[in-house]
Length: 343
Image (cartoon, rainbow, N blue to C red; front, side, top):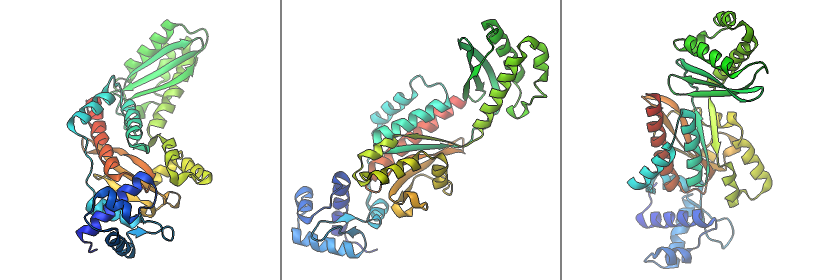
């Protein structure tokens, strides 16, 4: 598409103003705000040309223009300059997420919430299924009478936990003994081999606590089963409320409902290979339910292996130049912290 420099300046000005105000942009406001050295009449002519090219739309007669989805795409591909975080901002961001971090799941949760907080869009992380190499330790902690917390830690630093019911006759010493025996048995055993036949010998050694051993085994199997599933962590879904595009209650309910469906987000991303940054604008999304939204996402890898995807979802009227930098910066933080935890 052949667009001269002046048309590009006007298109960028309209996009910036529209993203800021959510209102159609007129020629006089462009000249005044952006100090263009041309008359409003000249700007109107250029806006008409941009509209004919399909880059602008005129929502109402005699109103200003707004960018079309095609206009946003041209801007993203040809004009956008990312507002990069400076080195100090990156260091502060890293320290904020890394503070007292203990496991991979915590990194993912913090990165997701931080991404939604600073972009003001909904953020998501689709984490690939965890490959559990081996269980390093099992611990049972009595929290209250009849309740204990089962904690399983893998050699890769992944922590799995679940509440379990325990018989009233079980003491703290019993829990310690069971924890020790499980830990010693599982230290060099891959989770795929944790079967009832394999664990039968434990019941002989802990015959009086066999009921609890059964509960622990069931809970471990459930934790391992869940770990094999792709997980979706969503943060900031209510940020959608601030977008004027979704003031219609029914439309808002539809969007929020979609965001809460893990299978939907997986489906929206599963046909895209990991690459630096992918931006899908409005109708570029294949799923009908999100054709009024834009996605900015990227893959994150550890030692060359794909761990999942992360990004933001919001209105087409999005600050692409800022959101892209936040997605990239937090991707780098996630990769570095997870790599360190897995060493």
